[in-house]
Image (cartoon, rainbow, N blue to C red):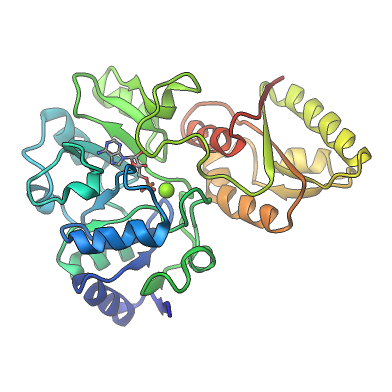
Length: 342
Ligand code: AMP
Ligand code: MG
């Protein structure tokens, strides 16, 4: 049985005690819900992989409550890492750093590096501090599913497989953290997220694009598999200027409807209004000129649409600046190659 606890002091204390004993607790962060276990316990780490059905080759992110705990998981910070830690932590930025000797190899899938983050969410921070140990926490979903942004999403995927879900309300940013690899000669963005490429370049100068951030031709880094964040229904993504995309969405949706297929539209509010006459299932994502709001709704909308089992889901991109780059990355992965340039 999985217990659902409110994120009050008693709920946090019970969750922390469960983590300290090697149990699994899903908890809210500002990005998405994480599935936490004691990062320094190989048995707890093994339970995380088992509960998610996550391949052992896909490394976990370690979450800390305080920078003072960094020596427990990594060596001395390089000047670049120290600068980012000072300016952007706590927050949605994960740094790939040299792995400290106390960290089990399984956490980082056998690599000499480890991914570390200080979440900004007060419940996450209180929980990790009370547990008294670094907490390994991938997103709290079954492997390959959409990341959870609410306690209900976590239960739908992991109910019965973990000890506790700490319910702290919806996650606000809505997409996973930015992952930046600082282990090589040039800082490399492996996954776009809540901290933007622009912010990183302002602080560091050169930042290379790696992993999926490099685009479809880029080298795949661990865990950044193409079919990830995938809905059950086939998602088709249109890339291009908003007007051209709207024409494509209308034509494509109309043709599918005429062929007797059920169409889901995952589109910004203004498109939802323009396409409202179609006999389609529309999930408005918020104003297209407000990508942070769209990021916040993206996964809940994707899950809601998917639960109604349309034959096809149509979506479009919102550009590449700021958090729109992360939205584009997640939609591209959900589309698993079904990308159309308009
Ligand atoms: P999740 O916690 O589910 O949001 O996914 C964590 C992701 O961070 C992994 O899938 C990897 O892409 C990335 N990551 C974690 N640790 C490392 C590492 N040591 N080196 C490179 N990427 C990593
Ligand atoms: Mg994940």
